[in-house]
Image 1 (cartoon, rainbow, N blue to C red):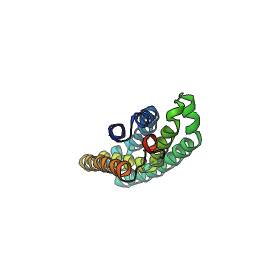
Image 2 (image 1 turned 90 degrees about the vertical axis):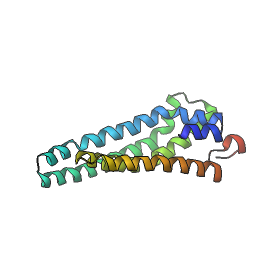
Image 3 (image 1 turned 45 degrees about the vertical axis):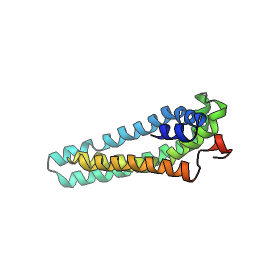
Image 4 (image 1 turned 135 degrees about the horizontal axis):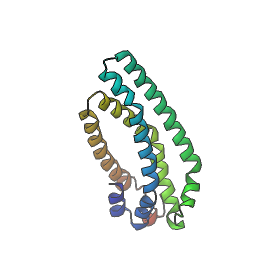
Length: 164
């Protein structure tokens, strides 16, 4: 939805900037999804075996490990994102917008990891509805906030108004 909204309300260069970061975003968020889902395999096994004390311990460990991973990924992203965009041959005319956009995404790594670990734990315990409802709510909130920040606060209007 970000690309659709940016393309419609901001312009071609901003859309290209969002598109230029798609692979990086997929890499980071996909890695987080895999790691957090992997952390909860033991949770599902312990829950299924009825060993609730051990299950609670695996949930705690998954939470701590998810926090550590999200801090590390955020730090690495903040330190090396400019270099990565250069290595990916990001065009100079969209480089600044691409960097600004991916930094916003990187700023939300901890929140994404938190959602993923909580959703994975709930799924491991047999509750797949709550994560689905929260995901639907989050998607709708993303659209609303995209529109508010772009239309009301004029964020991303560098192409038309000479500012970001």
